[in-house]
Image 1 (tube, rainbow over the protein chains, first blue to last red):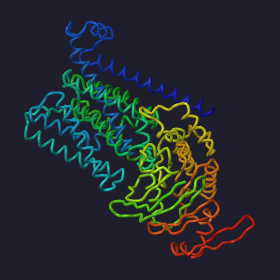
Image 2 (image 1 turned 180 degrees about the horizontal axis):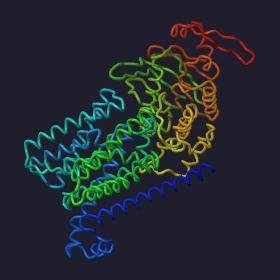
Image 3 (image 1 turned 45 degrees about the vertical axis):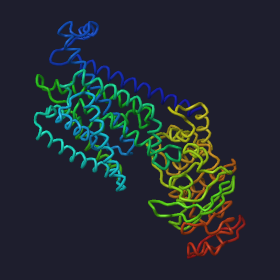
Image 4 (image 1 turned 180 degrees about the vertical axis):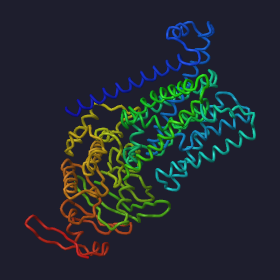
Amino acid sequence: MKTSSTSSTENNKSALLIIAAGVFLVVAAVANICLGASGLSLGTLWSALIAGPGTSAAARILWYVRLPRTAACILAGSGLAVSGAVIQKVLSNHLASPGIIGVNAGAGLAVAICSAMGLFTAWIIAGASFAGAMGATFLVVLASRKSNASRTTVVLGGVAVTACLNAITEAIITMVPDAALSSVDFRVGGFSAVNHARLLPAAILILAAIAAVCTLTNELDVLSLGDETARALGMKAAFVRNGMLTLAALLAGVSVSFAGLLSFVGLIVPHIARLIVGNESGKLIPFCALLGGGYVAVCDLAARMIFAPYELPTGILLSFLGGPFFIWLLIKKKDKQK
Amino acid sequence: MITITDLHAAYDGEEILHGVSAVFPKGKISVILGPNGCGKSTTLKTLMRLIPMTGGTVTVDGRDLNELSQQELARVLAYLPQGRNIPDITVKRLVMHGRFPYLSYPRHYRPEDYEIVAQALEWVGLTDFGPKRMENISGGQRQKVYLAMALAQDTPVILMDEPTTYLDIKNQFEMLDCARMLTDMGKTVVMILHDFEAALHYADHVVLMNDGKDLIAGDARTVLSSEELRGAFHVTPCFIEAEDGPHCYVRP
């Protein structure tokens, strides 16, 4: 009885925390929409939402600039955060993330190839990003398995793959300067170039993948017990692992297709989420989705406001926050090993 | 009863088991003894299909294990591996994973799953440990939590790969007492041990292995006194008859 009441209290606490993350997301989204070079009051926001696009200057700003941008922040933040949480669980490595194990760079290369070939259709770019992310993921995972690499070696392998793929991307940009991806936004990550057409396929894929991950949280937790234990519990561990990595690559790849190479979101957000709701995937994944969207929306707003009227690409701010955070993680890991 | 007949297994193309045959009686503790690298863990892993079987048959109460799906196998055999992760989750959550073989997509737990998990925690004496985190409990308690997870699997057979390794003396005895409790509940326990004294006291049946084959099987005293055991380990077991029964120590 004592155990069941304690667990019920814990469940209530987790539900409250997830609701709080939802509120944070909504507040961040509203702030991202309303604040900026031309501010929108809540009243104006409401009337522009009701009136629809094209009826006034405020409505045009809302429907054609702010809403797509905020939606892009939320989608990319949620997608990368969930992708990071899944990769960390599957590889049992809290230092892994889409950016660090090469997923983002694989997607970036695919987008570079598409741009160089003049393929700008949203679905093609989203599909190519996914394929590039998949390729990089399985390259790192396969190399790690073949060499029985430790968890840290997986990260180092990812760093090497990232460096190679980024070098190829740079070479393409150098050789095909007209490619649209040479924009700073793509390489450092940002949202100034998003529009409805680019966002729609990405939104469908990201929301579907997050929903799929949310129904597979039990599998994720069993997988993190180790292959032997997972298989002894009746799970087809290799199949589930590859399936989860595919979903993670899809989330990261599609996010990169419209947001560019955003760094560290998939590393920072799962860590903060784990500190707040713990490591059980049933709580961690939805929390990451909400926190990740809110975090990127807040960073995007800060990137627009800090040096206003100049706009900093959001990826620069994310890297500025993420770099020290990663160093802190390494130090913390070393302290724990002592 | 588990019947293994002419079991062969290979890993990375190299044959490790060269025709193991053994019987593990139902409702009893069977102990596998043998020097390091002789194929004890491989035998258990082959039963669990963690290492591919290249020949022979294994039946549990007459059912051929090869005919079972992975999920069905997990409802027949539970396995405590030698090395275990320490996940950053609560004790209760870990034990809940023992119900995984019974859940269909999307894996929602049913009321009976919670009851079985509470029962499993009670059996290993960790009823109040449910909300504790795995990181914050001792090695002996973690071992019991994994045992509780195996109990939650509700299988007729439990395989344990060196369940007393890394445990202090008190926890070793508690773990072995848990194994006895399982056979009292009608379950079949097969475990790998290195401690002859523990095997003498807890095993109902002992199988000695060396070089990927079974050498001799029987009651503990018979196997421990055998020439085969002396040949396999290059040691001499000695016995002392005490008031509480025989004890075993080893001379080089």
